[in-house]
Length: 529
Length: 99
Image (cartoon, rainbow over all chains, first blue to last red; front, side, top):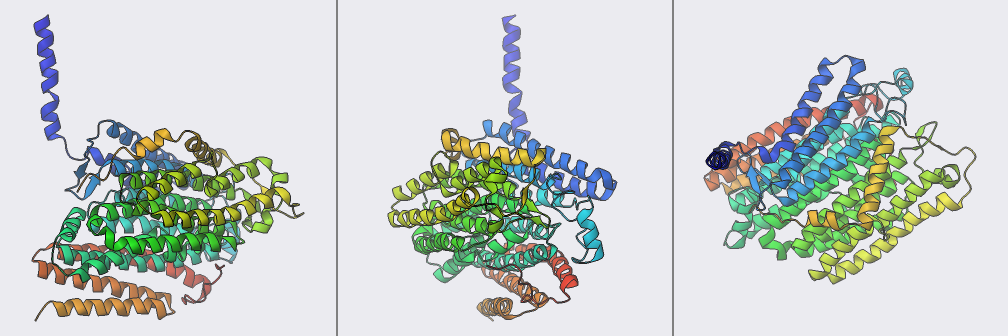
């Protein structure tokens, strides 16, 4: 009997060994494969399903995809090698920060997809029935009342999500460029699909597209110059080439500058933010939520990887410049946010200020800087999704009522909505017991321990200025008389309720008990070099 | 013939494209200037491939072409839709979103 069991044990011990050797190197990137595969399937749905089945089919497919990718990710993380591993011939680096960013992206996109799929707030959904219809025509007025919706938005979301996941795991600059386009091109289109205010929506799409393509060209020229400098686009090779060589610094510095400009544009940082307010305001609100949360995560994932892996050995050259950029970003976001009269634009300027805070964490090239930035991205994303979810509920006859004057006295009409929005604004301002406070605290602490005291002082002043315009909205909601013809607060259906609840609960949870998420964020550094 | 001249030419073309994006008014022309910038990058990629003696740069140029083609599809669709509404492709006339 004991012989039998020992033989069995031996067989069990030996069996996995050859399987591990033969296993394809795809186990690490299953989440990406699921998302991109489902995106292709979703295009087929669009072509083959009859019209009345498309919306339910697409919603079920998209939600299942995100959950399945999340499950695959969780099962992989438990057994993932601590040193990380590469996949797809070394073009993707799957290390701890990449896994954390993937998890964040999947969780945030779940909330965003719930908002996108909602059809209770606006009959038929926030998206136009047929995007080709000209605004202002008879057909356009007819489609406002119809209940159809351009369900192409679901495959576009999945493609964008896939691009984002590749972007923050890209191990070379060419993969990063292709991923950048895969995430941007669907977003350009999604911006132009709003059911109401078609003109604003189309204008947002044109502006985002032209400026986005302009920034991509800069990014690409940076890639070309760094390729000329290092003879390779692999991030580790660039760092190695810059560490000790007598090659021309012109190529290195010019390439570095152009590359970082392209990345900062995508992240809506500092002086490269000009598209942000227009696009956030014009795009359909669920798309704005997706863009504000997920694009920020992906872009800062890319920035962190480029700064900490490819440009690590030149950090003393770029640090001073990025100090300036972070200061400009915080000041622009805080000061121009004060002058806004539109809620969506105000949140856009708040996102510019937040991008400045995130950049502070990114330029602290330490373990703490990395983990605090990752944590901040998680907290900011959930708060933002819930914020835009709430904004989509305040409506009048012409659609969303986003002008600040229309929000006056809203607490008297809907105390619950006002309370939730107050909580979210306080989280954006960084008041204790919300996730925003913990996020800011860990980022500033990391910056201080890396000798960036003056920058932290500027950041604190900027936070104080920014807190003023959040408080202004709260005061407006509670201490003003509501206008007689003011907007109504729609009672949301299951999807929007779920998205807002998810965002609020996580904002509260990370504010009270952040330790577990901080542990995840600091579980490892960029290991593939 | 040193390859450096090609690098200078590509920098020049890139600059012309960038200035064009900033000063031209027609969305289609702005978009063409962006394409010029991308093609200037292709030229420098191929030149660097020659200087470095590796084929990577030439392969990358193919990737850039494919991406640029995809960008044309999306970009022209967006510009067409706004042109049909406004009967103009001028970027100055799209000025509803401000302040």
